Length: 357
Image 1 (cartoon, rainbow, N blue to C red):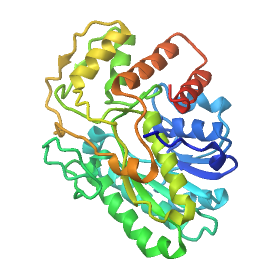
Image 2: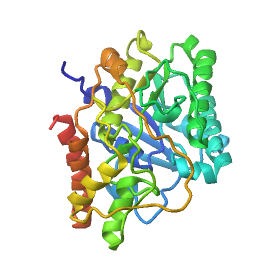
Image 3: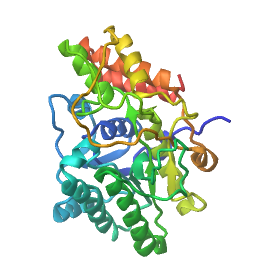
């Protein structure tokens, strides 16, 4: 079965509101949308840290950027009204599990209340065609069995991040049924996670941690080397979001599920330790990681998604294997280290993905 492709004609000239555009996934989405000629308005906090993909792309990135906190209901409503979007892709979030243990109240406020503030701001828009709220592969009640989750599985979450995203799912579904469906505006949620790719400089992320260790000549420390995750390149998940929005906007989303998983074509069950070994080899550094000795917040050992419903309903399927995703990711960081034009390089990876190469 040939995978469906993102349609540039659909996005050309389309008014798109993208929250979280300064984040890792958000910056990739912003560049792809701008490449297709979309009229993009971004809403997000300013990027933090020494480097950010958005900061790298921003001088040549075509979009309107509002740097604000989605917990600020008034400022958010004003920015949404000004943008008057036809399509909404909501990616703004506190997305780090370990930070959620340190800052649980903030995590719930951003991921739940911030999302509700956005839904409130969207309620009275007359030209809205579809909205997609991005949650996480961690929204499911995980018994650590390793079984791949399907969309009908119960929601849950032991850590504050997972619980906040599950709560967001419930809140979005309630708003969708109470305020949007009667106006024929489809609102849906997308579940993906463990995304890798160039330009991720976040704390407590495996490949950025390895890149920093290689740059600084330090050893790599792993917390859960035996944990398995549904690893996928950022362009896989973003392509899923864009295809999903195309389907939702056509015929008012008739027959399109209101929640979909986006994950690898097949469960490759690569562990954190195996990914670390392969990335270290690609960076040309010894496979000498050590186990973190300090006590760590608990995390689930197994996590996998069944994305067959997305294949059946919107024609999406993963294009790159974990091996290819890792190679493309390492290529990006190597180019960055060598001082390449990273706007052009990042754009070239999107072009290669579009060509299925």
